[in-house]
Image (cartoon, rainbow, N blue to C red; front, side, top):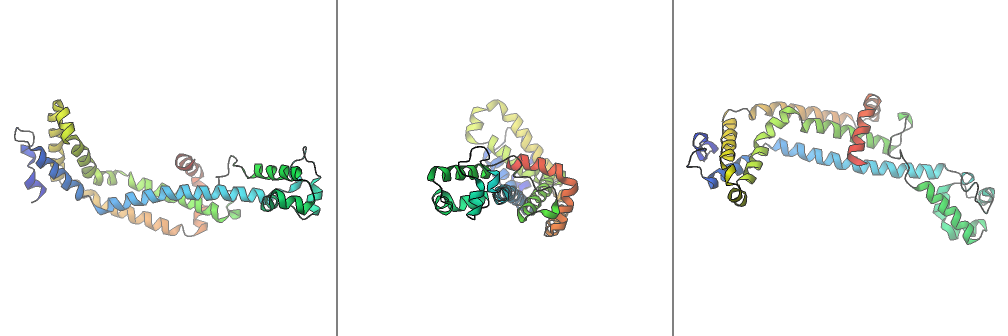
Length: 265
């Protein structure tokens, strides 16, 4: 039976309103939701997750780079029990090397006591701790690591699919399903029993939705949504090129950093 046959909009506000029939009709509207909307919602969810993962990877890379680039001569400058040159002479050059060895192996390698070794390890750990800006891609794209590229790419994809998901034509196509869900909840047994004073308004809303569906306006948004999705997927494919990622970062930096703060920080 077609939706129009199951629920005649003209009869909904009257005394003959059948809540069970109306709920059946609302469920059918939800079940008929265009697959493209499900796909877009999935793409948006995955894009948000990818930004979080890419941000975490970028932070880890920043910490590792900092460890590798921090010489032992830059640690414990005022509180060292052992001259850092002594560590250099023993073949220990960076904070990263200290953490790789650990306190016991450092003490054995450099022939220093356990307390002194522990101080050096703690100092190296301080270097590894999160710092402001660890998640920010480097200023020079030419010097970006893989993690920088991946994070910017993820942000560009999320920005694009967010625009797609909340574009007016996408919202227009999604209107029926979203409105039907609200009305299905409003006509649940408990809500219907407890909110008798709102029955007329709910019935009027169901009638309005049925009339909106009958007008054909919902389907008119479909081609625009499909076209927008195709443009998004083309853009994502183009982002396989790190040069394109860097180019877009050049003039979208502020917007993308704001998106990063909203999604992952």
